[in-house]
Amino acid sequence: MDHFQYQGGKLFAEDVSVQSIAQEHGTPLYIYSRATLERHWHAFNDAVGTHPHLICYAVKANSNLGVLSVLAKLGSGFDIVSGGELARVIEAGGDPAKVVFSGVAKKPEEIRYALEQGIMCFNVESEPELQRINQVAQDMNQTASISLRINPDVDAGTHPYISTGLKANKFGIPRERAVAAYKLAHSLPHLNVVGMDCHIGSQLTQVQPFVDALDRLLLLVDELAEYGIHISHLDVGGGLGVKYLNERPPHPKEYAAAMAERMTGRENLKLILEPGRAIAANAGILVTQVEFVKEGDEKHFAIVDAAMNDLIRPALYAAWQDIIRVEQVTSAPTRTYDVVGPVCETGDFLGKDRQLAVAEGDYLAVRGAGAYGFVMASNYNSRCRPAEIMVDQQRVHVVREREKQKDLWKGEHKLT
Ligand code: LLP
Image: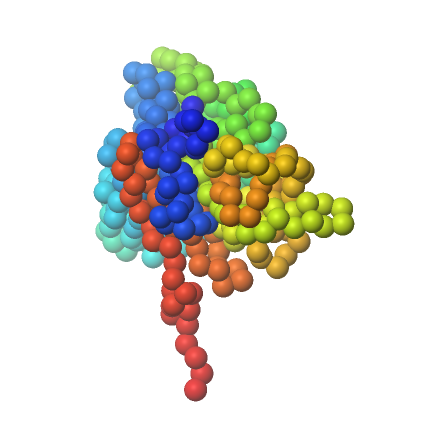
């Protein structure tokens, strides 16, 4: 359930008409709903119940300060993958002590910064990374808390580009090397082994792969205990899918409850979840205006002012995201359109073969755009990135101003 609903034929973001926001702030425009973000976060947090746990929102899904501040106020933890994401979390009021740091190539300066800020844990992806973190911690006369990302080799059954838990992926440490890697970590004097983690992929639509991965990790936890290595948390990553078309992903409650149930009797093992998409995707829309309706020889095109640089998921993953009218009533005829942007690439489309009634000047909304939307935007074709708005009941906050042309060459230099 989200808070983008029609009222009297007009699309609303919470209590505000989307058309009125678009008219005031221009398009293309991302609009987020605070109530939806909060609702989704609580769905995860509440479903785990009384088992000790922490929801670490995956910042990469949407790192806008407005979004992060809303989640920080709920007491959320955060999963980060760069020093930049940590800086954002702190700027937004997040607690570094609730931050886990993932990613395959953390630079020494990022490790140093994270240690200075007192993050909860590094999710380590390789043996050389263990050595690097140990070295930085030693230089700082500190101890770093670490978790090892284990590759459980389960098939998440998702798009190959966003599947991460298979042996062929670059992520994590293979199960067969896990015990040796833990022993190495345990032996390094500036490391404190506290956890185990995994992340098997994104946009998963079934609970079973998550359960399989968790079961494999639990076996390993028990095996480690035999070697005197005791960990205090298990982080099962993110990856729960959302409904874009006719997927039927499990509800966060079902997913989180299944995870918590597997942990019964292991109250000394804190459960960490790293959801990104399931919290943010359907808490955001991308609003765009129709520039032209163009008749091709074989196709009808709705040429809109948003492009692949604003929302790249359709072009990059052939992702399907719903495109709806902002005002339902129209006298335009319904036809099958390719909804395309102004960028000079054939791959620049937001949707293909969509049944729509559109006329020049109409506003359309791309749904499910709150995750991996603005964060993946670029300035390709020297297009200014869109503004971002957060609606909170009847209030409209600009949480990021539209880029200006002079921002486009910030930091660039001419030759004289
Ligand atoms: N934790 C780790 C270690 C991750 O790598 C990811 C996502 C997450 C958590 C959050 O996963 P989520 O709950 O959002 O599925 N750009 C792609 C998605 C890439 C996901 C990468 N890792 C897309 O637009 O579909």
